[in-house]
Length: 243
Figure 1 (cartoon, rainbow, N blue to C red):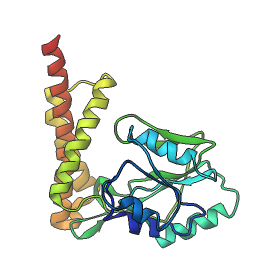
Figure 2 (figure 1 turned 90 degrees about the horizontal axis):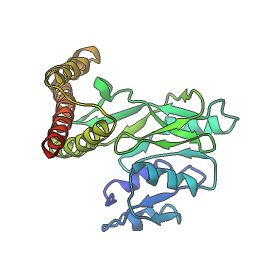
Figure 3 (figure 1 turned 135 degrees about the vertical axis):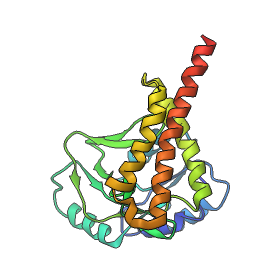
């Protein structure tokens, strides 16, 4: 929805595909018009959630092998060549994980929790589908997936303000999902998990090598964890008060 600023490069990066399908959720900008420059298979559909929207897109494809891409992502030429070579044979796996590299604060991040950030995006729809509920949906296939070497490029955030907006939205969904799953937050979770996340990102996953940007991303990743548990704690307090 309203991806006119990013949809063209995303579709250009998959112009080699046998078919392109775009599912839009009532954009009010030029997203649909721009998408129709690349394909006549542009469907405008009510938004009912990430999983349903992506499974619907796969269901209306003319072919069984699906490559799923978000508007803020790009397929690199190396990945495109790798996929075409793979699908020119009989793929030995039902799905393939693809490393994803994020551009942020002026650089491509190959440190912290952001890399290799494997995403299972190439799959045989006869043997797999999107699963999940509110956030962090993923494709599940009926056997162990393979792994590709080429990367998906991810242009997730315009700036730090946009990053913080996204953190706020996603932590709300993540806390809701955790609460529904029966997870509860204690003071220990609020104290222990965020610094643990920071040390993992900054030291174990080498965010320190990216200088100030690595420090910022490590801190914001830890903030994500802290805010998620804060919202979970808030949800359980609200239920206790109402009960």
